[in-house]
Image (cartoon, rainbow, N blue to C red; front, side, top):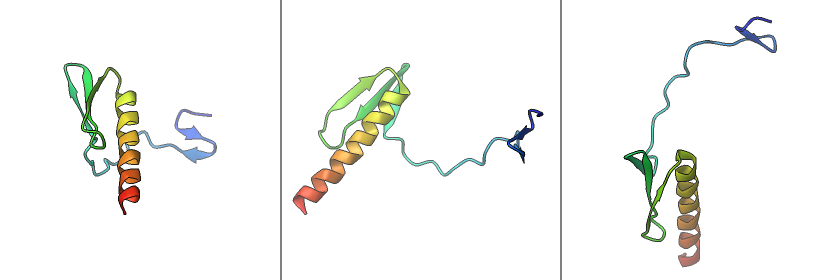
Length: 71
């Protein structure tokens, strides 16, 4: 099997088309990732992008829960 084929299908070596980017919910400053938590008003500084994404997702869940509690 060549590097151009995988499971009988042709695999393109081109990069995928760029998606419309939405705000990530965090910024990178000096090699650290800064996440402003909208649900609590606190700001967290973390060392990895994965942890920043995790905090953003947790914040979205918390905001959704707050909206459902007040509705």
